[in-house]
Amino acid sequence: MSMSLLLGLFMLANWLLTRGKGNVDASHAIESHGDNEGGLSGLQTRPSPAHHSGTVLRTPCIFIVIYVLQANTLLRFEALKEQHADLAYANESFKDVKARYKECKKEIATNRLEELEEETKEAYQINSSQAHQIKQLEEALKQSEADAHQLRTEKECYVVEAGRGEMVRQRIINQYLFTFVRRLHQSAEYKRLLREVFSLAIGKGFMDGISIGRKDVDIQAILKATSNVDPASSDTFMDAYEKLFDRSV
Image 1: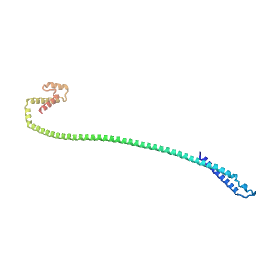
Image 2: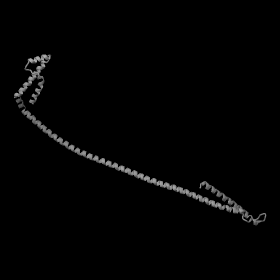
Image 3: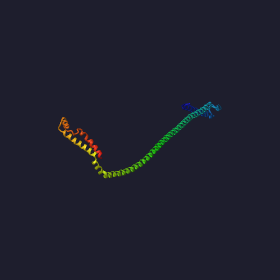
Image 4: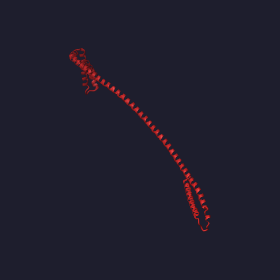
């Protein structure tokens, strides 16, 4: 039932009540009038029909008002039921949202905690690996320092030994050099080799001299006329001289 219909019924009931009250007042006025022109006062003492009509009118109006009130109460009850249902639905929805929010928050916290644990584990592994590498490098550095110290010690020993050896060598050379040179010069083989080298040197100088300003034909003619000059002395002189020097040393 709509509110407009209820308003219409309420206005109708109000109008009927107002009309019934007017009829009741008129009937009371007629009954209280005891004297009239006809002298028929007894005839006027009968209740007026309007009094019965007012009573008849009041009775349906009361029922209408009761009906309107009951209908209004039912409408308000239905409205309250709908509001209660809406509130219950909203409450359930809020509970679901709240539960979902708690689940999401818990899930996010759990995922973040797992990520932090994984990051912590990775950082611990990296730190452990770096610490192990640092330890290895420190041990290698200590070993390198020990090796460097050992090498420096050995170098000093070798330098001392080399200095001693050089001193011994110089002493031997100074002691026996004159004897070596004297015996070398007295050696017949050394003299023969020295003579050959000087002969090659003379031959080389002779070859260089006749080669200046002459043709090959003239040079060959001179070499044929000179039997004691080796034509290959220019090529063999340096080898013979180096061999002689090596033997002297």
